Image (cartoon, rainbow, N blue to C red; front, side, top):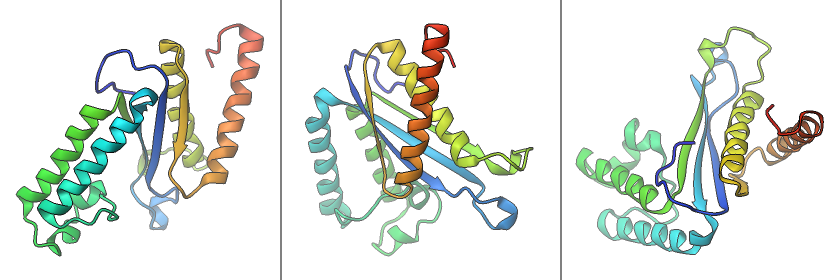
Length: 186
């Protein structure tokens, strides 16, 4: 994880959302499967929530962006028709993007992403979902060990059962590694 701010933060919430799909590119799947992760210090959670709610209220009053409307990166950087319907130009869309990035700098203790470029996968038996989650969980585990602070994982709705099963497998693997080898280096 890349830290947005380097200061002691204590325990953190890790909010995870995915974009793309796990299907093969040759069968019409997306080019990538990506897990985005934002870390929010638990001790500053309510302040962070208030900050983001105020950001959205401000965007609503400035640009007419509904509070309930999801802001997606591909709408900001790629397909901008969502914002064209609101009569917004490129400068205004850049401002929305910039304000979200600034909000992360103010509120988040870390941000990161795992991107699987599916067209570059050599072995056809690779489980894209498991690979991406394995890398993310490994990074979060490393951060937890380095900082000696817990991280609570919160996943966006969608593949809750599959994420939960993978997380349980990951924890069991860590337990086996720590019993066998001392520290959990695996």
